[in-house]
Length: 256
Image 1 (tube, rainbow, N blue to C red):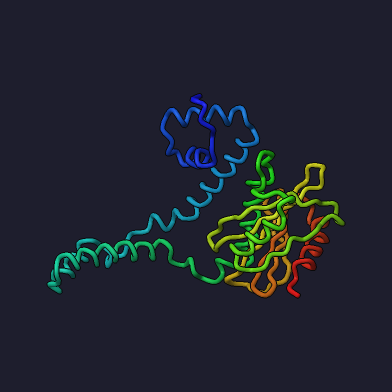
Image 2 (cartoon, one colour):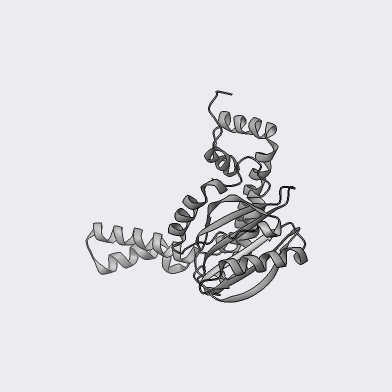
């Protein structure tokens, strides 16, 4: 080891396989001696594999004929426009057209609805709840600062529910990047090893939706939306035990 600390960038680069040989070996040794971080890295790898599997059918499709470079060049010649202008136009067409082809369907309302929010919450739980090193960016002692910061990022006033009556204390929170924009994540703990995660973000679709149950393996969650803001409470907890806590969260986050 050269004494340089292992950073979050190193962990993500390790998952993506872009580290040089020496640094890759250093990260591998670090993970062998830090099992909690290793589990979090496994979560990163799982998310990457899920994304690759989801996008594989699109990646295998042929590029539309109108986006072939030869056809673009032929069209440029037929118009006899200045060479510099045509080259720029061809580049913009390739970048914009290919981007639209790869991301087609990303703006459909269903992609940003309740089901998507439930999946994002479950993924956040799987990555951060097992982390005993840095599960949150800002601690409960920084709650006022966190609320101001996260409200600015999601462009909505954020409420932080007090779940102490249900036996859970606030640990803190972090900002989560999703394909539908930034989301606020709050984490709670019952001081006996059981953690809950609440994820909240503005909704592009399903802006008002009743509470529904979603399960993924051992992780269960209740997800709903109220006046354009979506919420999901998840945990490795029986749905029957989680439902009253979700009801409490819904009452304490309801707009006045």
